[in-house]
Image (tube, rainbow, N blue to C red; front, side, top):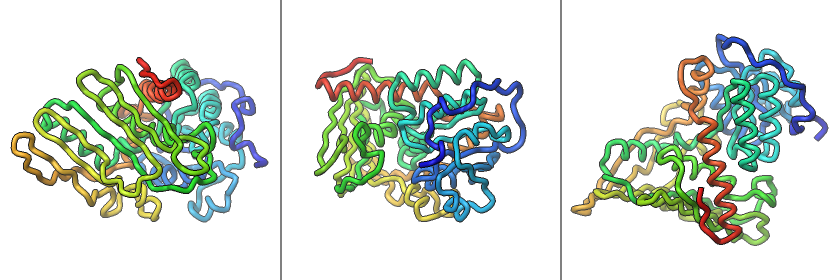
Length: 363
C-alpha cells in the first residue's frame, strides 16, 4: 500500500488545540477504511443517521467508494483526513493493530473518534487512548452495534419487566459455520474469535450487569490450518449470577443464541439478528421490515412449564450513530462510553490470561 491509510500516529500532525466551542449543523464524518466493516456497516449507518453527513472516506480503493457513494469525497491518506478542518468525527474501520495509534492521532488533531470493536489490542493501549480523550475533552466511543440486536433488545425488555424474576444464569452464544480458514487479518496469528466476536458477547453483558468479579476462559483452535483461536468459552462470575459465553466458527446449527434463566421463568432464543444480512443485501437501514426478528423468543413459565412466544422490538443498528450525533451536539449521552469500553477490554485481556494459564482471573 503506497498511502498512509494505515500509518502510525508518528506520521500524523502534532497535537492541535481541542475545539473551543461545540460546532453546529450536521456532524461531518470521515470514515477511515472501506473494507467489509466500513462498506457494510459504517457507511450505510452513518448515512442513515439524522444529523450526520458522511463527507469523506479514506481508502486505497477510491473507485469503489465513488461507485457506491456518489458525491462522497475520498482521501488517499489518513494524514489528509486529519488536516481537514471540516471533519468533526473520525470513524476507524481499520485493522485492530492500528486502532490505538490512529485514535490517538485523530484525538491529537482535535477530532471526535468512533473506533470499531475491538477498541484496541491491549488494555494498556485502550487506557492511553481514553486518557488522551479525557484530557482533551473530546468525544470517544466504540462501535458496539450488537447492543441494538433485536434479540438483545428483547432480553433487556424482559429483564426490565421482571418477568424472569431474579436472573441467575445467562448463556450467550455467537456461533457461525466457517470451517475453512480465510486469509484475513481477523483470523491471523494474534487475532481470533475471542477478539472478533468476544467483544460483542462481553459488551452486552457489561451493559446489563457491569463488571464481573472474575473470568474463567478457554480458547482453542478447532479448524485445520487455523492460526488463531476459533473457539472460545468463558464464564463470568457475578456471584449468584453466572454468565456463560461461547463463540465458535464451526457450528452449523446456531440453535441457541440466548438461554436466560431466572427464579420465575426462562427465556430462550435461537438464530442470529438479521441486520447484518440485511446490510449485506443492500437494504437501506430503516426500510420496511428492517430488523424484524423472524424467530421470536420463547418464554417458559417456571411453575407450569407452559411455553409462549415472546416477540420483541425490531433491531435498531441506526440508533448508535443517531445517539452519537446527539451526543456531539450536547443533546444526549455517549451510547458506548470509554469507561464501558475499558471494562470490556479488561475482561477480554483477563480472558486471554485465563486461557494461557488455565486459571480463573479476578478483576
